[in-house]
Image 1 (cartoon, rainbow, N blue to C red):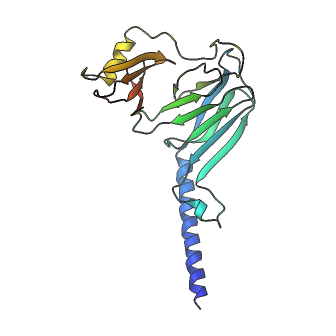
Image 2: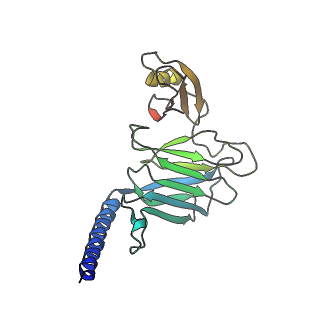
Length: 232
């Protein structure tokens, strides 16, 4: 007799979990969008075809791994092959810092497109791209607006030091340094450390023990704080 109530409880738990999963799926689908970007060779600027694009994210907070009868995971992962250099990726969450988009192609270092947390930026439309390559040609992050088509310029494993595929400037505009500093140090109380223009944005660090601590900021030429990196 005791076995029957246990089976009923188990069935109820399964039904409840299934309902939660179904609601999560519907909510997840409603909060996604399509990203549009092109994949180029950083050195030559030539289009790269046949790259793989992996989208991974945590799509539900339930520990589904502990529910083996579902055979599901709380981590979503999808890999597609981009036949052309023009890529359209659907199902990307509008706001989810757990999301990672990895671009990979034979003969090139990977690129990872990430969303930022509200603690890093006040602009939810900003994505940052990290490039991996043996030549370290980028040398820093790149920031793009997800609502506009953008470029992912992969670094070749060997050959060349050009930057024909880059879509950002290397020379800052007049007055942009002062605007960037004013954005992160408006009252002038912080002791600035490194102030450097890289990948189309200013990177500004504060010295330890000063206002701002050991944080450093990425700031656009217009004075918008692109990201805050605390304690680094």
